Amino acid sequence: MILPGLVDVHVHLRSPGGEHKEDFRTGSAAALAGGFTTLLAMPNTQPPLVSLDYWRVAQNQAISQSLCDVFLYAGASAEHLDQLPLLSARAPALKIYLDQTYGPLRVRGLNALEEVMAGWNVDKPICLHAEEESVAVGIALAAVFGRHIHFCHVSRRSEIELIARAKERGLPVTCEVTPHHLFLNENDARRLGPYGDMRPALASSGDQAALWEHINSTVDCIASDHAPHTRAEKERPEGAPPGVPGLESTLPLMLTAVAQGRLSAGRLEELLARNPRRIFNLPEQAETWVEVDPEAEFVFPEHPLYTKCGWSPFEGMRLRGRITRVVLRGREVVRDGIVLNYQKL
Ligand code: DOR
Ligand code: ZN
Ligand code: ZN
Image (tube, rainbow, N blue to C red; front, side, top):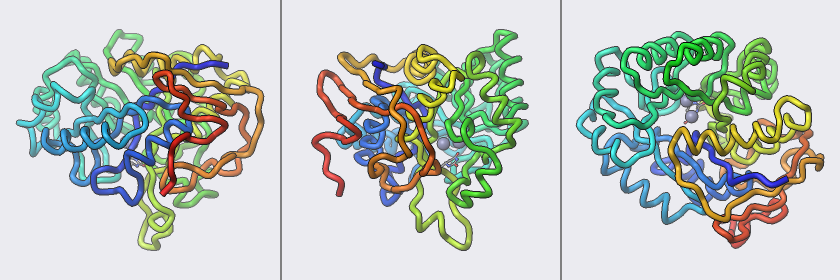
C-alpha cells in the first residue's frame, strides 16, 4: 500500500528549552520512522513562541536541524498582543490554550480572548486546546466572528457531538482526534499510571466509542499530540507532567483500525495527509510517499524508538500494518523501520 507523506499537525518537539525530552533532530527522526514528512510543532516551549524573535530563532533551528518539514505554531499570550500581527504573517496557525495543561501558555477571560483573535488578523486557523465547556466557547467565537477554529485533540462524546452540530449549521470549525483517545480509555490510564496521563486525560469507554462513531464524518484529522517527557519525569513522586509520545505509533495504530474495518484506506489518507495539508494550507512535497505492508502483524515497537523519551503507552500492543519505506523528495529516508543516514546520539 502506498500513502502520501503524512502530516502531523500537533506535535511537541520541545525546542527551545526542553531538549532533554526531544529536539528537532530526534523528533523529526521519530516522525520519519512513523511515516510523517510534515510536522506542525506547538509553541508551549521554554520560552514559549509568543514573540516574533523567539518564533524566528526556533523556526530557523527547525529548518536547519530537522530531517523532515517542520512548521511552528505561534503561541497566544495576552501579554504579547503586539506580536500577533507579526506572527500571523509567518506562522501557519495560532495556538490558544483555554485550559490548564503543560507549560505557561493560557489565555484567560473573554476580553483577552477577543484581543488575541483580533491580533491574529489573517485567515489562518486558530487552534484551541479546549476541554468540556471551553469547546462551546470556541464554537461561539467561530459563530460570532466567523473565524476558522480548529479544535485540538477532541476526547469526549459531549465535545465531538457539539462540534458535529456546529458543522451541521455551517460554522467554520474543524477538529482532530489522537490515537491515544481512540485506542485507550480510563481503564488503560489506571494500568499505565503516569505513562497514561495526558491532557485531555483518557476518557470513558463511551467517550472513546463516540470518537469512533465520528471517525468517518466529523473528524477532520488524526494528530498524535506527540508530547514526550522523560521516564525520570514520569516517575517523579511529586507528580508527573502530562503527555505521551505518539509519532511512531500513530500510523501502525490507524492501519490496524483499517485492518479491523473501522475506516477505509482512503479515509486514513484523508485524515493523516489530505485534510491536514488543506486545512493548514501546507505545501505539497514532490516525490514523497510512504510504503506500508498492511498485512504485517507485530508487537509494538518492532525497533528501538527514535523519540528521545524512549517509551510509548502502546508498548506490547499487537498491531497490524508495518511501515516498510519512506521516500522524501525523491530520497529514501526510511527502510525497514530504520531512519537512513541518521546517528542516534
Ligand atoms: O498532555 C499534554 N501534554 N497536553 C498538552 O496540552 C500539552 C502537552 C505537553 O506539552 O506536554
Ligand atoms: Zn493540548
Ligand atoms: Zn499538545
